[in-house]
Length: 130
Image (cartoon, rainbow, N blue to C red; front, side, top):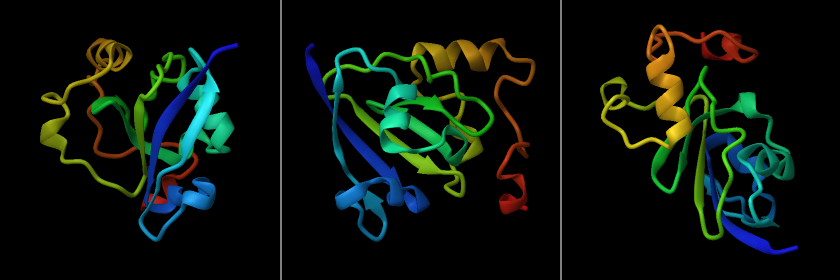
């Protein structure tokens, strides 16, 4: 089976999932997975629960944000760069509709009633954000 290498970046509290590559502000593990592995499979490999991640980018394109994670079945490619930010990392609201997005994210945002725009999020980490 062919293997691909992924350039993974973990920021904030997510650095603890970076193994030996973890530093004080970020981790940059080079991950090898079978070709075509998905974001969900990458998260499993890292031991990173999906509900702990906030904003996520794949090759600079928005793929997930708190309360909207349509990228779990997205197939990754060799040399993809995936950046995971912790829930406490903020992203300016005004950029959400102007950002480049993977297809799954675009479809999820524009098909939802609120178009992915929230001021507060429910979920397992809600108490930590209040």
